[in-house]
Image 1: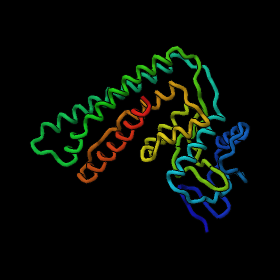
Image 2: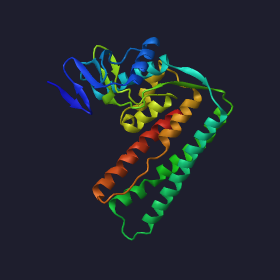
Image 3: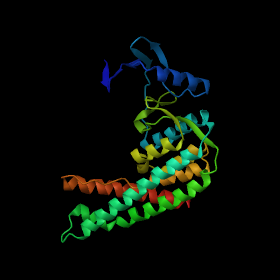
Image 4: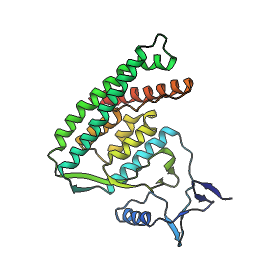
Length: 271
């Protein structure tokens, strides 16, 4: 019996999805680099790709996170290249992150000021105000670390890039006869930090990310500037936006602080 998930047809022995020649080129490249942890294409026609169906073994989520890090580090390690980079690129990254930090500083200062003027705080406002110090500390840390990072990279003439999956999640990693990454449709050639950062923001903060990074580095050691960049990106607080539902506002703020305290533990560990 066929299943349909996001325009993908899944049967017992194959997966059928819209033809994407860019993916075919990627898979050929991955084969050349010795990375075969993806479902193989078994047939191509004018409209579709057919890839092998992976019979997944159900494993504990934490274990899955560990296996994902092994597969991701292998992808990055086997596709690493050093390319010329202009100083303007690092300046642009610095300016973009710095601008975001300054925006969030003003946003949260104004948000807190508005709350402090209230006679009776709502539950979500009280929760926010009570824990505000961690947001303020995170913004200061991210800005100071950004300056440290820029000092390191400003004189670099090469950058380390690799194939970046760009959509890493537990649901896009399957364990069958071996580990597989799926859904490469949005892949990029960029810094490996991009995958680690996006995974952390999506769900990695709920896992033991310190251990996951240790597992990742067993196969792909991060450089000093890469570690700093990762710490900067994960320490920048998400933007909390209110909606007309107090229960969900409380939940969103609680989730944000769970993320921030998880990040604080990682930063303190790396000091």
